[in-house]
Amino acid sequence: MQLPTAFIEKYQKLLGEEAPAFLASFDQASYSGFRINPLKPGLPVASLEQATAKAPHVKTGYYGKVNGNSLDHVTGWVYSQEPSAMTVGEVVAPQPGEKVLDLCAAPGGKSTHLAAQMQNQGLLVANEIFRKRANILAENLERWGAQNVVVTNESPDQLEKHFPQFFDRILVDAPCSGEGMFRKEPAGIEYWNPDYPAECANRQRKILASAMVMLKPGGTLIYSTCTFAPEEDEQMIAWLLKEYPDLAVAPIEKTAGMDDGRPEWADGNPELKKACRLFPHHFKGEGHFIARLVDQRSSQPEKKKKAKKGQSLDRNFRLSKDEKNLVNDWLNTMVPDLKVKRMVKFGSQVYAVPSVMSSLVDLNVLRPGLHLGTLKKKRFEPAHALALALHASEVTRVVTITEDEWHSYTHGETLSGHSEEKGWTLLTCQGHSIGWGKVVNGTIKNFYPKGLRN
Ligand SMILES: C[S@@+](CC[C@H](N)C(=O)[O-])C[C@H]1O[C@@H](n2cnc3c(N)ncnc32)[C@H](O)[C@@H]1O
Image 1 (cartoon, protein in one colour):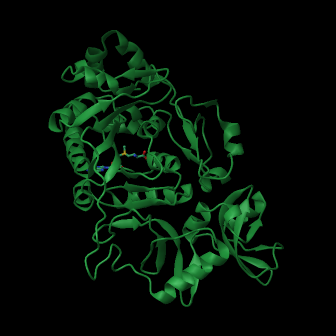
Image 2 (tube, protein in one colour):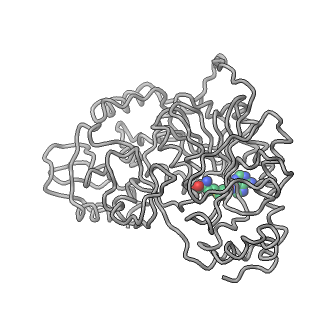
Image 3 (cartoon, protein in one colour):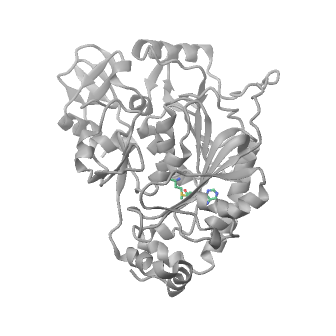
């Protein structure tokens, strides 16, 4: 690989004796990996057969490639993620019930990992600044079947106005110079110049300043990049510690091949050793930097905010009584155990909002929670996202189809010869919830979203 001379000289200086091994790693093959989804009701057997090894550092992680068109992938039983990137979610370690923010979230590798650990309890806000990327993020989270995720499309400085001191845990997986992606995406090398890391660092400081506005006293901030540049890594943590004296670096458990942070590449503060570096000449992955910081102010018990008279968290998004009844009747018949405490509509689209979510007003929200379905004239049509978030055991009417039929279904075809009982049914294939069908005169009408058909 043709690396820029200035890049080579920089790392020769920084790494000394280690530099030849580091630079040689750019000519070696890159690593692929995937995580399995514990929110789904079984193991993705076909994908696991493709795994080359278990990733020892991530509970749900494996080395190997998954097929993007496979049943496992299309139904969200697996997520393809590079093995060093999956270390981040493991360090974030969100707990069920917490309020968590993934501030730079698209396309959703880390968000899906966080959602998996939260077990549908609490709130994960997955935010992305660019609309197109935010749409991809929402799609990936929908496949993953997480029920407690709100997807927003805001810049960090807008988001901070909405969520002051709100989150228990914030991940800033920062836009960076991406030196750890050179092997996978060599085109990225063209953007690199000696000043690029410093430019990225300016942007990262702004993003981190917004993150700090949103962090609760006593909360945890996780900062990660996929670059080796000290300006964006140790020097960024040194800056945080100076700017926010309440923050302290917390240790990260390191397994084979993981390096300590390098204090000598910043201000010499030995605390920086607690950060984690993943170098491709030591670790089987593309490269990452991760630091965990804890706010040492004591956490305060939450005050319940009273909605002002005539206002509510969801004003503008309320369903009428009739609309609510329509949705609840459908849910009670088809998914009796799904209890929706907070329901909103965006246009004709109905969502279940995580109850600890703040107001939706004045926030650019793509997905305010689990998409339940669409209000049609006097009827309710369930959303594809709802099918992907449910297990067959939770749904009163289920039809199991073969893999060949699943292919036909994804092409938009109707299915025949299954069920005589009229009405909605969840379709499953090899235990995977794949979407909705509606039985009419012995055939199953296809409700696979047109935009996903192939
Ligand atoms: C490293 S990527 C995130 C990858 C993601 N966390 C994942 O695991 O799939 C950084 C993200 O930050 C977004 N970004 C770019 N500029 C930004 C800014 N000024 N503020 C916030 N996010 C920004 C990018 O669009 C990109 O999606």
